Figure 1 (tube, one colour):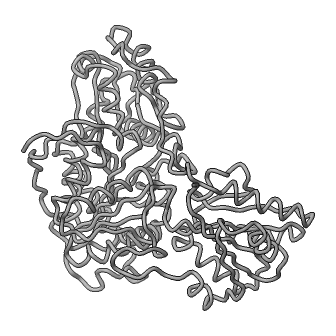
Figure 2 (figure 1 turned 180 degrees about the horizontal axis):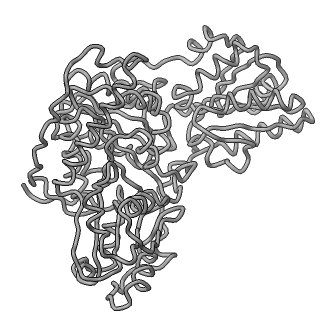
Figure 3 (figure 1 turned 90 degrees about the vertical axis):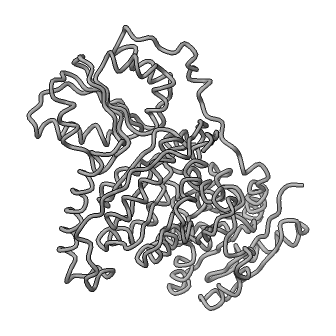
Length: 526
């Protein structure tokens, strides 16, 4: 098969398409969300669609995987947080099919509300965790992940980062993937897919045994690579930083200068291989982004084997750039020839696509500020991530998606003299705002809520949600949903209506009592 030039997400999508998936789903977000978009355009028999949130996505995928078929879920790093509840027990129920979960972290927080390192959650879940160095490795590891998932009955994670997703490289789609020897003790013993107090401890022990066996299997596969140079300073490089390292220096030259361990298996770690690598070294430099997850585990392995080593953990908040790798290598190995074409700090700063250029939320908040001034009132605005990101400096609070309603409710209890207003986006409404709205109605909240309706998940590229047509089901009505949820006070206006109409609607919202809801339909700038 001919080589093709693909970016990281394209490589993963094309590899997944070869698996005969029954379902590919997720929630919009970058990186990782592009995989769903690409899969939908490949013309496969896979059902590909967006879910209302990440928890729903993984639960649907689990339904596929416990019935002998294959599923793929793609979410960004913060989306993993919403999936934790089912995953903390899904690891206990051996699958009969296969499930791969792609998690896109965003070191540097270029398009996210935080700079989290999801690898820490991978250890908490105690599930296999792979991290490809480049698009070719991603293509290989996606297929390997499905093989591991099916053989061991476990969901398998693939972690990518923004810089991996954007890297372009030639990918050979014809390379063979090794067959995985099945774990021998996966039996259909009732209740297999029902973790409960009666079997929780036994299932947890069985999970540990499977993970131990999987670790041994990983050590036989071409996932982690190692050189045996004679130096006493070893270098450990993790995930996509391997690809960045290759652009800084020729690996062949580096491998002759220093013992080198390139790691794409992040959990479980190949302990015996690592211990062998560390033996005889005096110093170890560990290159990984954001958190020293691998570095600290390597230190624990060294301590267990009574190895006295000096450590340099290069992890730092945010992304590690090529110019920073060049500085680390030049200091540690002065004789190396560094690529002179490596860009400096300014040139390597990423340029992010801005999906919010047509956003009119400043215009919206200007209207609310004017109405507040008319009343002589103080307003605090609470928003959701994604939607409202362009006016973050004008918000009083913004935490998790769907969280503005509950946060504003709490604020109203603490500061009733202030008009605390919750702003939610249309995608966020379906994602996770509904439970908070139901709670506010049930608690008799004094709360104004504004739905900013763009008819798409615009911040992430215009993906669909249940409020718009998708070719399978009819769009859902916000008013029809809210009425049985206890929202009796509801109005809908369009931002393009005359200003008197808009100001009257906002005055009704600010001056009313109880739980009231204003749907504000918004089109792009002319």
